[in-house]
Image: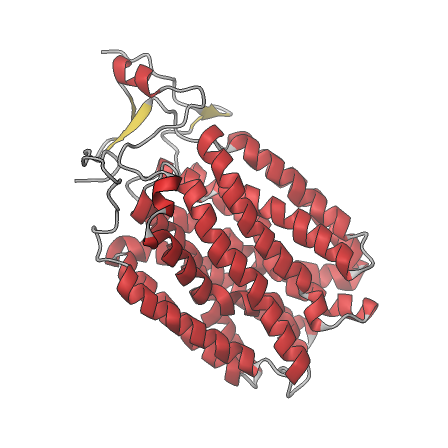
Length: 450
């Protein structure tokens, strides 16, 4: 019987249902642009040289950006869950492109904190929450780990591209002009992505083994709402999730495991370039390669760990990746040669990417995908926002006060160890993660294979 459900969405003649891998690709491209923020460390020494700022003052902008990023993940998640991703994405794109152009005009730490930190953080949070976890988890109920991991891989690779490009650009035309051109590129790329981005139609459903299909007329009419956002009755609402210990402990585990990675991301190039014994004493070009190494492994870690979680389960994958982060922080604490520095950068990137891929997968496993944008937004605010604020600040302050990063990296290894203990007790075995809605009878799930 012919259904009166909405037609399959298209873009430039492309059937987006049959080609649903476009949506993780859009996430990857969005995070590739946003991930350029992780190459902030290549601006650190030029800014310090021009303005005479301390390391703690310089990285304050990055810390602010990561914290605001987390706040806007949460705030933006509410609007994504309610209205869909497109409008949220376009607002975020405007903020992100504008932040780069405004950063080219700064002359004080406060101005950089406001432009790169606040305006840029708003843009990062809104574009990320609109283009990644919520979209991919809806389009891929059968392969959430792989799809989400692929969607967020760009946040690692963005620094691999931006790091050497910005290093060369700063040397050729200066850091101000580099920021200006970056803003223009961001504006064009994000506008194109935003025209494609959307959720699956609310009056379609996923049939295991067959894929997305239009609902029959009666079901389609009931499913269609003014916002055209589909709802799974098994999934916990934000209010229900907030009353569970799992949401808050997942955020705490995220914070403890990512703290050191964010410390390293914000200052790796500066650490590599600082003269011994404070740093490694590498040339600018070599330090740029260190950043690129970490970024490549960061990007590779996201789809890799997402796919691994689909195979061995989120519990096993999460515990392994935290062990890698502990090893990475310990290696950074003893790094004294370029060879060890490259090894540490690769380890840090691979673990960092894994943590960023596995946390949204774990959140979706616990609470479902219907309200995941807002739920994961709060988890992200606690984990990445908190880690992004305190990690770089602690690293910069320790380096300023002691002349070395050693104690900072050792403290990061300790916090990751606490996260490992939490993961052991918090994350259940594969297939047992999804929490039951309070007072609700179990409803048959249609978004997972039997």
